Length: 220
Length: 341
Image (cartoon, rainbow over all chains, first blue to last red; front, side, top):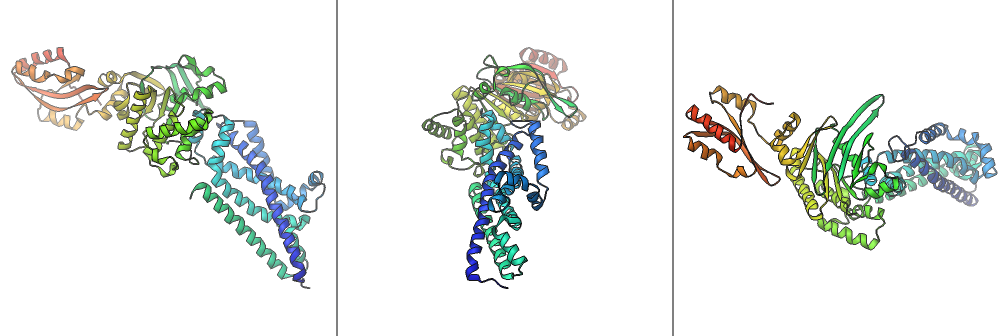
């Protein structure tokens, strides 16, 4: 029961497009939310420029609640919320919503970890020069942590490619959906192999892009 | 200029209270190069951070040009900080910015027009001798060069005050001397008041005009560098001075001297003009005795000479006694007792 590749290729291309859309959209929305949360987490720490115990603990606890939940369970668990926000639980857009939530919390931790590694002396120097906390965030914290941050986001991107395949199996479309329907349910090994190869290429591409970009930023 | 008025700073570490600074009152006059020396943990770093309120005092006030900085609003404080340049032991340069970018940063904060920033950055780079390094990044520079960038950055907004947090402690002796020369130049050319902290007496000796010695959060001794060096009161001060000024032979040498029947030793100190006069030879010749210099040094402090000699006198004991009495009228003399340390 093998597929006819001449008519099947367009479906593969379409699915690859869906996967890329899911990953990039999630990366954009997730980065915006994640970077904001990560920055808040960092600056509200004890003895930091906007120390705030309440906000710090709140963020910390919420992140710790969301992060350990396996993605496939999370996906199903918030399906009611997804329906409320997106209008459906099927399709690419419906997959982007839960992926963004999980990604943003992961990115928040990545951002926080990178910011913690900035020498506190540099922040102190900026304060001593009369920089406001907001100014420090945009002109010191972000530029100083940017190189490792890009590497961190690359890592997250690779995870997102994985997530997109998981989302695909429960109605999210994309390569995950194709691999499940044809490879798993119809035992067509050739489809399985092709999708796996495409996923590998996507991961390689993302990693190469991230490495190049971060190297440029860090000048090494 | 900078006046600490009964300033205290207490940190809470869990349940424990740490009194980093205890009731310090200190006045730094305009144009001073004021050094605060102390061993690590003495509270000097905290005291320095009180000047630009990187630390807030628990008690007391800090006045800069008569304005109590603790009463300023957040916005006023940021403006005030532009008037206080700061340099650091680890330089704290922005690694994501070039040398020129680092120096331009405080000017951007102050809202200086771009054209003016460029001119000022060039001017500062020339002043610190790094005109060819404008486009380099900090990780391409040596320690001494990094501190020069730090100094240029601290001077960018034309501050009245420069505070230095162990600015030479991470540098080798040659580079230290370079940076200290630069600080002296900053003080002379721009009339900038410098407040520095250090644990190295060499730094105090080579650049400072005034010194305060800190121990356990308190200032235990302060005054002009020459006065404190030539007449230290406190044991800790004496230890610091001894670290740069070999004013006594080692206990071993002293013991050997005594064992070999070397007789009494006297310590003579010459402060200022008297160091230029042949006091010893004139007086001993007059009384028909001779002297033997066992140990000693003459050095320069704040452009004045300070001599410290350990001598023994040889000859008729009565003549020696009268000679010593006569010397005592001209300069400081005392018998070296048992080892002071």
